[in-house]
Length: 288
Length: 326
Image (cartoon, rainbow over all chains, first blue to last red; front, side):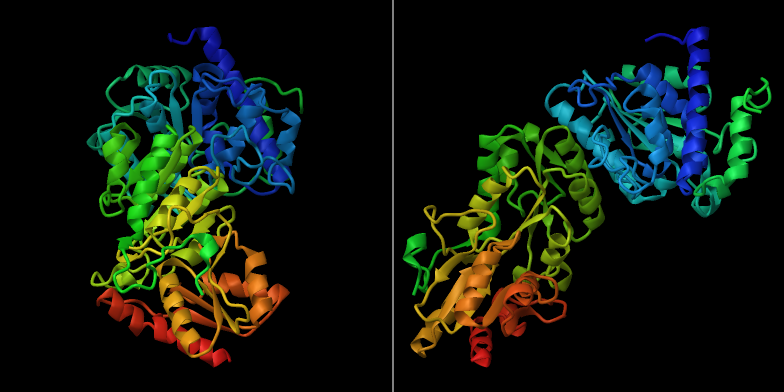
């Protein structure tokens, strides 16, 4: 555990960009699915899978692995794309998203893709499952051996089920549990603070005895440092409130809640891919 | 007459037959399952003694998790523990688990194929004075409709103990239905038990009606069978402890033998055990049926005896249903 070197940071940024390109490609092929959340969480998934996580993509059931629970299953394009780039399966398979017979179901199902720790889709059940995994390790006195990561949306914090789990994890001082909230301020019907205000979010988690870290969800160093800090905290579970920009990487999609639950059409995808491949016009695209 | 092969309780028809709450058998079974397998863990939503999980908690405090009044969390946390290799048993009143947390049970337990065992206590109107809010009479319907779920409704505490110990070994989700009140002991430690196997408790050489019963009402069915015999009406009584997977062979065999079926359950007639039997028979051997159970109503306060009679699930109602079919 140490601060990211400059070359590591740059490599992670390139990875994240590749993952965003895969996300746009998959969504275009699928013809349905969610765009904003996956793009917004690409940096966090990249740091997690390419820097922080103890895992073996070639042996997904490795008993000593860290566990990742994706609670808001609808952002699975970023999960699938990251797993493919990490070597869990071939990049080619990403094209099958949401198609009949595909292992990449519209919302994750571990029957189809056993490398997943859990199936998800209906919101607000992930944190409880991650809490159960952390509790099991604590009972076995293995809570120092592995970390359980739970990725959550901000919209799903409107469900009481989240707070039931937060209370239990705080009560049991589950130091092996790290939750990451995608604080992008949007949900299907609009902006979270219009639909159901969540602030003051950090105070709420502190009240349930969680260690709270707030980060810029697109700053590789801050994300990496937060994961390290979470592992070091001994007395409490940790929540990382990651402030992200929904649709990050494609200017036309950013911060617009209407991109929550729809895929780009062909023209929009071409525009997005061009923007990502040129890093927002910083480099000349080979694809033009 | 009573089926001697099953080594049933010889005092089953005595006025002073021993009575024990079915949930007590669960508590003893869980304790034994915990002794047999260190991976068994217990989770409860603030009803530890009421659901008899305290026996397990006292013996294995480190393997017990108090969840508090949070049934959705109860189910999903258990799913996570199962993902990490545990065999979790979760308990509450059936009204709250599986009543309140159905979606968590469907998605995090069954869709995920995790071996969580759900024990729903205080099922049926025999909960008594607490009233209709606490009387789960829909639980078997909502559990048996979920793929992968095994549904067991033991007839007494002895069977509940065996069912609980067997549930720990299935590697699948299981729902075990329990009742609050003391009910007559019909089976003995020597009575065989196997998930998915129905048992003929009362047999006749030429039965005219087949009675298929589940839970504590099996005793009412036996009393009805005995009374009917005195009227020269022979019936056969099947104890259907496993609602799913249904012992279709035993059900069809009985229907073929009797050509008439009465089902008896302390549950809504819609979607419960009777419906499961009807689904089976309609497909392979349809016969006229009568359904003893709650007829699309909610429960209310009263003594268990009063309520069983009021909702038409007592011995007289069973006899009446049998005669209607003749």
